[in-house]
Image 1 (spheres, rainbow over the protein chains, first blue to last red):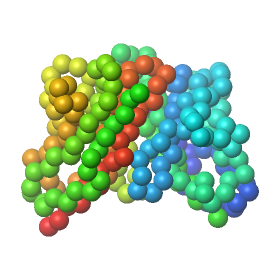
Image 2 (cartoon, rainbow over the protein chains, first blue to last red):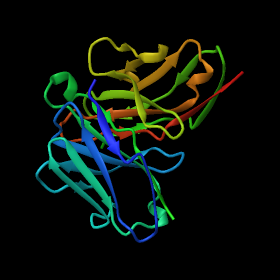
Image 3 (tube, chains in turn cyan, blue):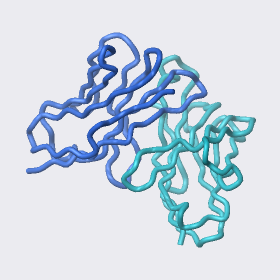
Image 4 (cartoon, rainbow over the protein chains, first blue to last red):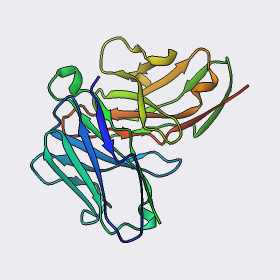
Length: 119
Length: 114
């Protein structure tokens, strides 16, 4: 099946710094990618929908100026956590659909996640 | 609006016993339904999915799920649980529109006792 990668897998940063997380579709093109956030022992919450060549769509309650999303190509979306604080520590997961096939378009492929720890 | 309910927060099953994890969804049309498993500190792994057709779907690792439209349910089952099945299980619904994301239930933690 289709593969989505994320980099880095784990990052520790100081409070006030910015962290960039990359999400790549390795063997398909993704016009739309999704960013989720998962706190310990909780479910995945959709943060935003990343659209190639246009602005991301953010879910209610998600600060667009804090979580910057850029989808510059059909295989890459980035999430930048600006001025990170300890409360931003979480597990961030991206996903994408393979719209090139009917079967692929029905399934979202998830990246392995990025664990962010802000000290 | 779509929603997914997993009524059981935590379930403990003896190794070798059968398992059923419940999932109820709310959606106006026929949704696409998924079950994912997540081990601690890991990403999501797709167990199985339902799009249409046969309402009993087979997945990986010996799991199956049955779509029951009348009950708006998509329960996950396994006839004999192994200790390695201990993990977090998420049910998810998809509206099947290209620009929409999955909606996840809150998850069920499965513990397996020996």
